[in-house]
Length: 544
Image (cartoon, rainbow, N blue to C red; front, side):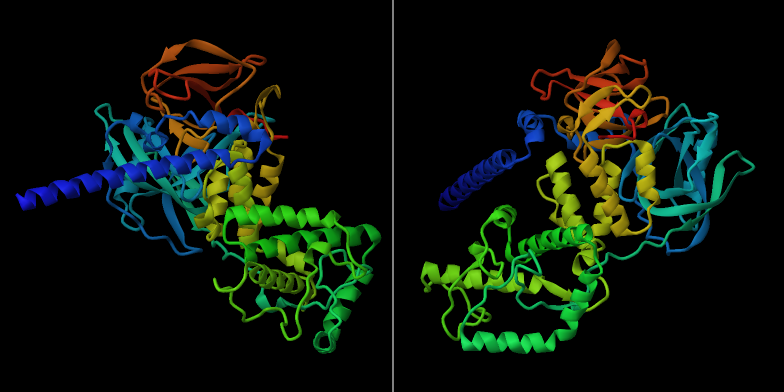
């Protein structure tokens, strides 16, 4: 009896714990929706608050039926390696490393290419995916010079001889030459592209800048203190950094007035992000401190050009508070004063004099981790992804992730694939995210949707690749609202990319081009009730 009672008691405790976990999860989801501060996306975020569709279903590609896992995971190929691979040419699709690509292969030559890839010894279960497109001048097919290796993860041969496969992008390559073998399978000689490592600003590239006055800089600097010890410390530092100050002055002396203003604005923006990165430990603290920093630019300054919000008092011998710990026994005002001292010290350090030829903000333009943070913040604003910290720590993966999911035209995405260098790719993606505002028809420039209409119907992102029964692969961006489209035919439930939704062909009402599909829920409990899938191949390059 005692053992039964204990077992029953433990069972009730387990159920209570599960209920608490569910309640905590629901609270976190509500807070994440309310925390959006982007006015442009407020409507979309509110719409996603009614989201009941399981977004992970779309990434499983269940419409392909049962497919068997190949149980093969090939290690990455050496950079610069040259090898022969079966090639798969796709129109309207750009495959990136780490992206999923489903294929329904019905053409005999490409079926042979898949069979060759499954049976090859050197790099088994691997084929090369290359984008093809039609020349706008003569209409001829053109082949991209850069593609991506695809590893076959799932495979199934059907009774009619066709093949269903699910692949995953691995590494970029350049096509050296291509041909058709004796059995009609396309093959090519490729060379694996060597990827660079993420760049960081060298720690020893900058010295410490003495306090700046209002005539030499607009940036925040350390407040002048009249104590003898403080004066000695500044005099010693000035003597040690004379050459560094001369270097900065010589650099600024060669700038024109507009160039000087640009230089100062760039440096000030770097100060703010440096301080935020070093002094805050959460997104909430970061946003609060960033707003205070930027609002401080318009606040009054003292005679030394120092922002009034950074003025403070220090007792003799306190220094900058280095080595002091914040403890619970200390009064609250003492803890705030020590923290302010630490902030001021970080400000003074951020006002660095370059030991190298280039100033600090130039290095920041090439710092992969700084660019990754900025790109992740912009991506969260547009898409609403709750957390990107794991990607920020890996700028190379982040650059490919955004490139594979950013809702832009296929030609622009091919441009991103061909960029060598993590920092260059991230900077281009930041530019695209800044300019991304509207979705237009490629043929007639009709406005289809706005940035705030982007909707994530797949756990992999707002853009994904899907294949129809005839073997055509479409990369579509999902939107919760679209304009200027005309529906053709009745909703069809079979072979739907999104379980529980029926699809209807949607053409541009102006030029008649097929822009994509409208998906309507067949279950009353599903939300959203409807959404749109727009083909990236039919989207204009100009997204402004």
